[in-house]
Length: 182
Length: 183
Image (cartoon, rainbow over all chains, first blue to last red; front, top):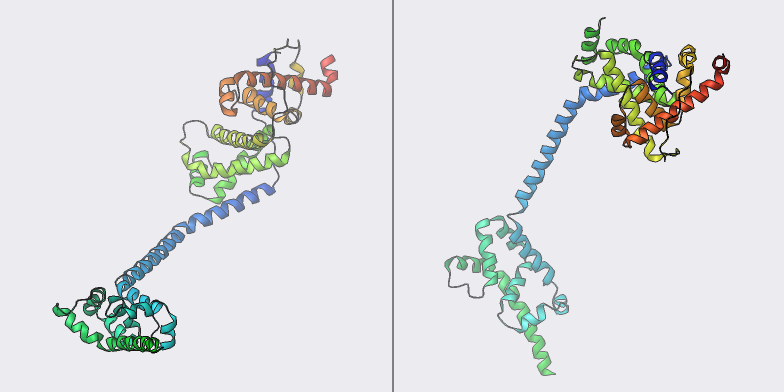
């Protein structure tokens, strides 16, 4: 079969042949073009609005992080005291395990750590001032605090708390006495 | 509206210019779509897609070749993309073994008297694989190497498909115009 002849007949007859499509096709093309033009028209506005919203959201998140990070040390000590000790009710102190063993060892630093939860008012007042809040953490960890000058101020703040601790000690002593009596 | 005005109007997004361009070239481009597809529904889909591409990319037209050629090329490429998408899901139903070229019939000039619409329909009735190769080779003048690259097939496969397409077309047209063949 002659390649050039057969193909060239098709080529010459169909190369510039026109077949008319339905009229409705233009309206569907126009609809698609309209949608695209609307998107293109508002694209810069939509992009800028989303950018502004994103930056605001990032700023808010950053501000939250910045405000929460400095108060973390105090919060943790306060929470620790809450979870380990519930000293307002003496019956509960007997029921919770951490207090009884600590009270048996008199004057141990662990007993001092639990005390701030008894009276939340001094703690909150300490939490408000940064200068006092940092030594509180240091004194609770160390047993010998009287040697340093700043710790003297803190001892004054902790005085009512210490009395409460004494209460618990007394109570444990009475329990021990009862046991001895038996 | 002359061609440069028409193009610049379309680049600016003028709906009037776009409609004018559509009216001017719709017949030519729809015929190309019909050649590459089995039915008019497929042709319509490709036709719409091609015009959207034309309007989207008209700013990239560099005025180097003819504008009509550029429009045709976009339409053919859209049809080929459509074919590639469909051919992934449909496995080839044609035996791809190499076919030896047969002797040509003595007289084929009677084909020239067949109306264009009938020739177009006979191409549309070909199996998809044969139709695409015949269009690219016979009408668009692509070489077998180019076709092989475009369709991800071997050059021999392209040649075989072209031979089969010709033979099928000849059979179809002979049935329709038997009296003219016998004369």
